[in-house]
Length: 461
Ligand code: 4AD
Image (cartoon, rainbow, N blue to C red):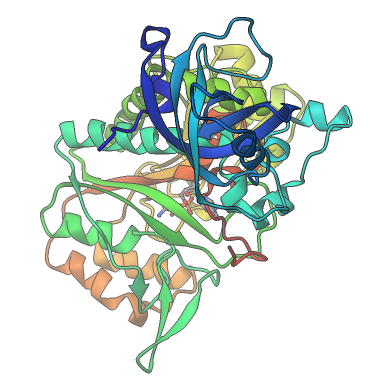
């Protein structure tokens, strides 16, 4: 009938009261056969539990021995009194300690674990200084243990807050949340990077994005929609920023005049999300920074917007040649990010009016020059997190563009037909959730922000 206490709720005012906590055996420090210190961890909070042989507390020498022999990472229930430590003992992270009365082992972990949380949590600097650590691959193989580190708990908490900010802002603006199908007859982005499968005898593939169906929702008078859902890409990209499965944040909306209406939304939505994270996740950010040091993201209240041509010009002035009708590569994007930071003091900005040739088939060409398109990319710290555009809503032009991109229009017939039944001008964008979190936190690899990442070599755990 006793109530559970959370380790993070333990405060000095509770001194003298008896508490019951459940947590993991983090470490044990042996003092003598009559005394030891058991650090119990609950999520990322820890408390030092002092086990002392005592007639008064009914703690025997055998009990001290039992606690000493508990395996790290085992789950234990501890009953004891909250005490204020007489002299602060290193290692404890709580102000208070627990003077143990009873310890029960709820479930034991293996005696020898393939990875210890302390080692998974080591910073690069510590590893370089010779402390034991584990490389990223080992950690991903043992992800259930790796995820227990404070930095990882922080990363996924921030991922959660990113989605909260996303939903909150969009719902307030009258968007409705949809779920588009992930099993499709044809590819949604064109190209060959699709996972093919057999759909009851019919060739099918996993959706590369909600693109087609979010647009069809606009054709169905939803006006403003968003989605949070899995996206599948079969490309053989062995980079720090590509996954084969990621979480796509997608928006699609009817527009009145100009694709700047979509960029206005981006320019408001993301600072809202960044502020949300900063307001709610200081502890999490600190935990991440301890393992992976980074500077807070610099962004302006009014999001900077540059044209692609302006970007090319800035690069040119800095002595970097880039094709004005081609795409930027990872290098030139980075370089431009640095130039923008120098000139405008922001690490978050929109680059728009991209050359048509480098955008997907559904992208609306500029009315004044079809070599360019009503499209944009958005960058954090010089890396792309969003691509978006106004879409072609004329079925004939859409068919023509799809063919020009080598797409078998039969496979997307129902999509193209949607525009024959009447469709408003519209546009939207897609965001990679893992990339947003990776770049906001200045992390060097997208696998760090995917719970159980899927890349060309990894299908487990
Ligand atoms: O640039 P992408 O491919 O654009 C689309 O999917 C369009 N349908 C979006 C639109 O509405 N026009 O993907 C959008 C975003 C990228 O900016 C990037 O953040 C992320 O999704 N992304 C990936 N993230 C992880 N791994 C990959 N392989 C990714 N590919 C794209």
